[in-house]
Length: 202
Image 1 (cartoon, one colour):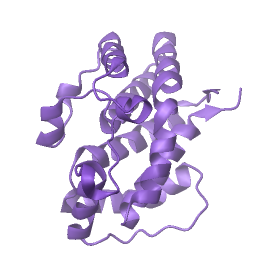
Image 2 (tube, rainbow, N blue to C red; image 1 turned 90 degrees about the vertical axis):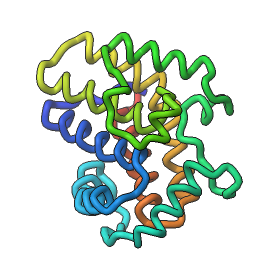
Image 3 (tube, rainbow, N blue to C red; image 1 turned 180 degrees about the vertical axis):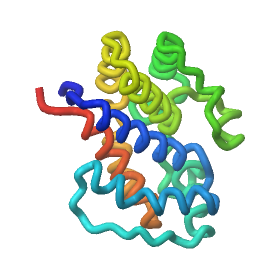
């Protein structure tokens, strides 16, 4: 698989999409975020080339919070999906993959500490969290869209091929299957589609 060639407009779209999805992973549901995601669903759905039916009606906030907690916080929920690359690929937190991701962030001057996220994720400080990786993707795409740079393009190639593509499509599939609310099922579908949309067959 290789990185799809994108023009500046497409890179900016994917950057905005990655930002939106990152926020959904890094924040427990609240009214403002739920409204923003609901309003963005149609644009994301169309822009990522999805053709299946979807609902842009928000699930009740208590249901969203219960679903978020069961999916990302509660290991005994029966639906728990740790949102970490290392956990998904090796069943181990803070393994070699985590350190590889942290080293990559340093190489492209991306600092996760500058991101706005819930206190829980900030306290854990794990660089291979789905939301943090998507935020880095967004930053790189936006940088390259503004001023195309072979070094940034090379970094994007590396990060997508060696990290995002290795786990987020399958994680998104599992999320869509395990979620009990339409919002988090759609988050899984959009996550999978966004990463696959960056790739094309070799």
